[in-house]
Image 1 (cartoon, rainbow, N blue to C red):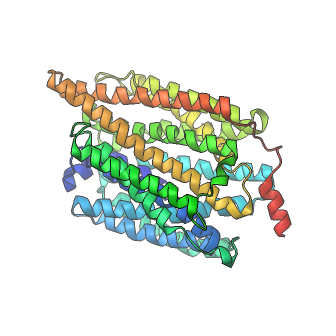
Image 2 (cartoon, rainbow, N blue to C red):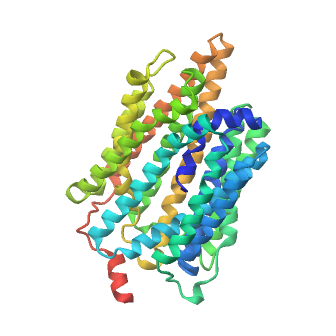
Image 3 (cartoon, rainbow, N blue to C red):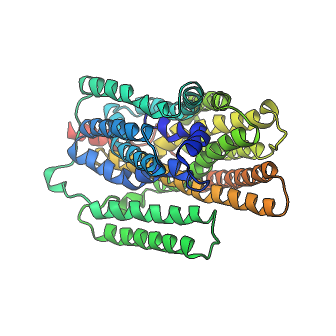
Length: 461
C-alpha cells in the first residue's frame, strides 16, 4: 500500500492538475511532497523503530497513512493535496524501516533472509508498478480521488492482522532513548529547500532569487545537519556506519537509480497522455509490461545472487536498466506503443527488478541487530532523496528544453517529446555510471560470507 502510493498518482496527474489547478512545475509537488517527507524522516523512523518497537511503529505508520490518504482524497485545493502527500510520506518514514527491520530479524538464516528480502523487494516493486494500473482504472472509471480512498480499507485490514501475526521487537536499551530530532528536522527542511529551488528553475533563470535563495538555504540546513550529526549523543546516522564500503557504495548509487526510475515514470506518463493522447485507463494498462519485467527481474536476481554475488547482479542490472532507458529515449510523436515504448519498458523493468534484491542485501551487509532498522531506513532515505532530486532536476531540464524549442517555433508536442527524451538519456547515463561504480568499488557479497546479524542474534539469545 505504501509503495503503491508513491507511484499511483502518476497516471492521475493530468486529472489532478485540472481538478485542483496545479501549475506545470507545481504538479511535481504531488510526487515530491511524498518523497521528501519520506526521505527526510526515514532515518528518524528507523531509529524510533529500534527504540520503541518495530511492530508498534508499523501500526502507527499505517494509521497516519490512512488519515493522510483521506486528506489527499478530499483535497479541494493544491495545498490540501500537498499536505496529504507530505503526511503519506511521513507515514512511510515511520512504517517502512520497521517492516524491513522486522523481516531482517525474523529470518536468522542468511539464505532464508535472502529469499525473504527478495519477496519484500518484489512486493515493493510490483506494488509500485501496479500503482499505475490501479490508478488508470480508478481515474478513468470512477475518480482520481479513489486512488487515495482505496487505502482506508487496506489500512484497517493491516491494523487487524499485524498485532495477531507479528511479535514485537525492540533492541535498543533505555539509556539510548535520546533521539536526534534536530538532525531529522534540518535534513527534511534542507531537502525541501533544495528541491523547491530546483523546481523553480523550470520557470525562472538559474541565477534568479527564486532559485538561488531556496537552494542556498537548503544547502545551509543540510550542512547544519552534518554538524549536528557529528556532535549528537545519539545521531541518526553514526559516521562509523559508513565504514562498510559495500553499504556506502550501494546507498550512494541508489540515488542514481531512483533519480532515473521515478523521473522516467513521471515523464513517460505525461508523454503518453499529453502527446500520444492515451486515456488514464490505457495509460495504466500500458505499464503492465514494467510490472512483468520487474517481477521477472526480481526472480532472476534472487536466483543469481548466490551464484554471481551482489556486485555482478547489481552492477549488471544498473547497466541493463540504462540500456532500457536509452531505448525509451528513441520514442517520438509518431511512435507506436509496441514499437516505441514497450521494448524499452521491458528491458528497463527486467534489469531494474534484478537489482532490487541484490541492492537490498548489499545495503544490509554487515548490519547487526541493533542497527537493522537504521540500515533499512538509510536505504529507503536514499531511494526517496534520489526520486525527489530526479523529478526536480530531470523534469526541470525537460521543461526548460521544451520551452526553448517552443520559442524557436517548434510544435509544442514535438518540443515536449524532445524534452522528455533528453531527460531519459540523462537517466540512462546515470544508470550506467551507477553500474560502473558498483562493479569497481563494491566488495564481493554473497550468502556465504560471515553474517554479523545472525551472529548478533545468536548472542542475544
